[in-house]
Length: 176
Length: 139
Image 1 (tube, each protein chain N blue to C red):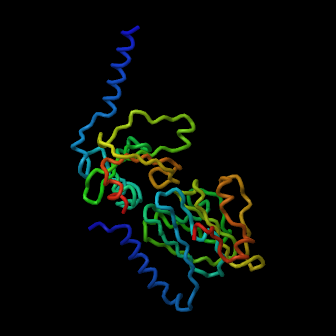
Image 2: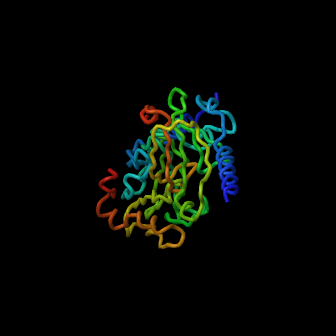
Image 3: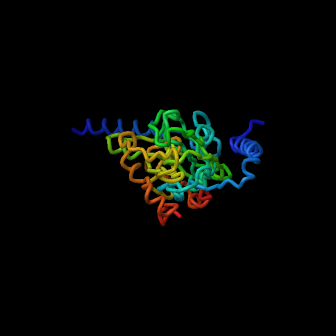
């Protein structure tokens, strides 16, 4: 039997869980970001689209959109040759396509601002920003100042660092 | 003057007839014959998409389609077209598209932000082929 994508993700996740169990024993924080959309796909978004976390937090991306697939992909030259919008020393990530119910985890340790997007929905403004730690932390990298590679719609959809730090999480009322 | 009009009418009929010519019976039940392929086999999408059902498309007709939409029992329930808004704005016309069935009980048109396969923001034009089709494709 040809293994399905879901099976691979499940077994892969299981193996990862075993490998990291000893690390998790220290109760490393986990935060969830949901990939969501309206029933007919008129709008798609990350919930929350802005999130503040402590260094070492694991981000769990879960596709809660029953009619669509999504990715969580860091802006980085190593992935689809995009301009870097994560801290210089941070490991870029790409969840690949997640079908409904699938999930993907990444642990963010380098302090700074991480911008990411959904590959098929970047044009629709499906982007998110994670702030790890806060300004003043050792090794902190602020937000990218590039405004040439992403569209004005993408820039408008990214919450400011100040807004994220002040609120902890940023999401529109209709997107909760 | 009448003769050129008759010739034009005959040409229009011939063109329209060619565009819509297909074997309705062959498409009634899933899976439709080649060159149709199941969308979820070629792009990462659920096999049954709530609201659209199980979709098949001839890849040569992308992005517009027609996408043939089947319910859980494999019954052809709708024909769907996906037309990128930017392409329409820039002058692309999608003319003479085929239909899965000549029976149409209702039409829905709505915006979609994009998905694997048709990633640009586009319109979904859904032709339902019987009264219960929309409900059967809902979930």
